[in-house]
Image 1 (cartoon, rainbow, N blue to C red):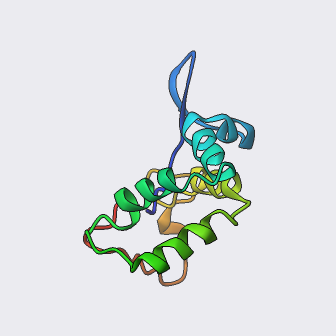
Image 2 (tube, rainbow, N blue to C red):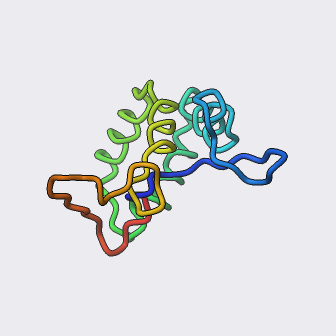
Amino acid sequence: SVCGYALMREDEDGQVRCQTKQQVKEHPKVALQQQKLSDKDREFMRMIFDKVLFNSGKYPEEQEYQQLLDETFLQTQYTDVCWALNQFDISSGGINKASQIKGPVLIYHGELDIV
């Protein structure tokens, strides 16, 4: 999304976007996912894949699916990716407004994409 993926936390002012990498790392969604990756929890990751990546109902062959899961557990920068997504926002309401981009921009997504 052009808005990235804001990770919100509660503070005295209500809901605010995480401002530091440490806040992102400690965010309940990130911490849970990181733990599941560390534990190599195939059942959990498959559930996430089915809901988010393969939400069209089209699934890879079982052998390919298992390879995708294997590759997932090799990832070591999950928190960094979450931090980048939390910081990225080129929407009209974002810090880096899309109107300031000088080159052509292609925004590509499928009709059923939810990520």
